[in-house]
View 1 (cartoon, one colour):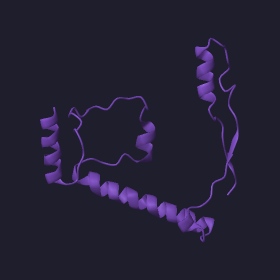
View 2 (view 1 turned 180 degrees about the horizontal axis):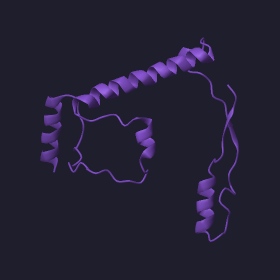
View 3 (view 1 turned 60 degrees about the horizontal axis):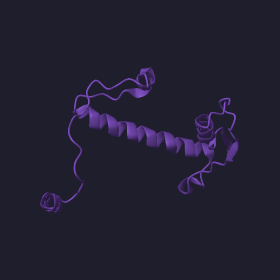
Length: 123
């Protein structure tokens, strides 16, 4: 695969620190080019690029099918690419869950109750 470049490596931090020190800098003044070599996942190493892309497409299609199944039951629909791109990135959701965060997570209900009781005793 051809190397990819990433524009900024710590430049934003340096710009921020310079601004805090009262030094005027142009945006991107501290940016550095860094070469990043991408390689296939080890499980796909023996496949051609065409076969790898086909596998990636199949994985994405499987994930989309699972999401449709999951959200289809609750009456919700999957947005899809167009729907996601139409959204404004700073828009707030219509409904926000107002449940308090759990004190802790536990996969065993008996252990959960034990932790809860211990916590209540402690408090």
